[in-house]
Image (tube, rainbow, N blue to C red; front, side):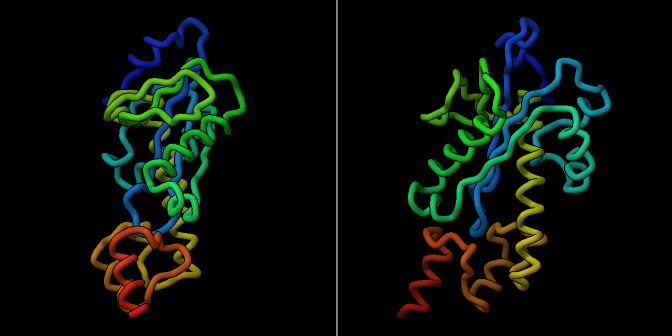
Length: 208
């Protein structure tokens, strides 16, 4: 279970401002990549704290149930990198850009950013440390993972209303059999990532 060990190590009890940062959406074939940055309150309600964990280890309903209470008790910001930016920079560096924007979106001076993964966004405006599997270890990174995941899932559900048939309300843009079958039948949309192999191959097939 995630804890505050990293936050404490970097001074949250000494008045330091520490945020957790995580991204979601590197793997899907469609939609933007998003990131969230979260500053937990000094006194996080126990009922919320005990439910926070890596969003990938939670059910969709559990994430949804925690989403609003979590947002209400912590400072947070969500940002994205667009499909054009994913195509221009590749998905890794677009993810870095989304994380940088999320930290900037907090609009407060950050003493330390805890970044999930093994890389630190190069243009981050504060000191940072990368934590591999951080959403399993840091409470603020895990909180960021929940906020980012629910925000992106809801975005994809909204897109599904105007782009029916791909199952985005269920697969959120990931390359499930349902999504791949629809992609072959219906073709790619403007929200598909043209640089990703299944989409690229289909575009080549259509062109030929």
